[in-house]
Image 1 (cartoon, helix red, strand yellow):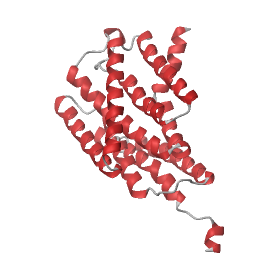
Image 2 (cartoon, rainbow, N blue to C red; image 1 turned 180 degrees about the horizontal axis):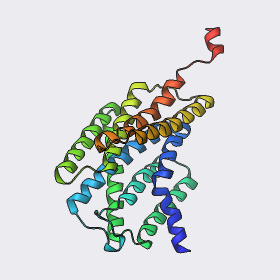
Image 3 (cartoon, rainbow, N blue to C red; image 1 turned 30 degrees about the vertical axis):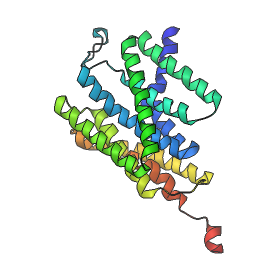
Image 4 (cartoon, rainbow, N blue to C red; image 1 turned 90 degrees about the vertical axis):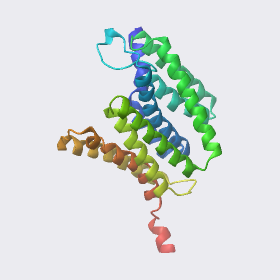
Length: 259
């Protein structure tokens, strides 16, 4: 029973939930909040690996896996993404649900033996610190300047990881997706406060189709190099802002005829 509850909470820290959440959130809920949430999440993934290889605390032997445990990657990613939403969304019920979810994820990671409380508290501390730092930078710098800072910081993290350890698959995933999302956001964004629902529907279908198509193409290509095989995330990250902002520029026929 407790194992099933733990696994239920942990599904919210996996990409099968997180990827659809950020696509739907960006397109349907709040573009600005979810754009910064995506940037935070991807930056956190790189920072987490950099911290892991700095401390080099091994995973529990019972897991039978190579790698480092501190700080917990799933917990840090969850704190950063859901914590940012908790800070940004003012509905009390949402805040309560997110708080319960984060507690459940932390407890589930310990209960199932993936991490100990030291790993969890370390991830919580780093995640909260990253949120506050990002929020301070957002208030201090222009958004365009902040994007440059994020890309420079993530590039330095990649260099650090490559020099001390090795750049893993999910590191390229995070880096390429970050470059794709930021470049697309600032190339194609517009200042419309509202976008028609039919455009959002088309943008959602476009994003999902692009995700499936690009994955299939790279699967067929059988590229061995991680540097090249993970380029798919550059296209996937790019398509999220592109789909919504580009399509929103299309005027209905009635407006064209009337204009």
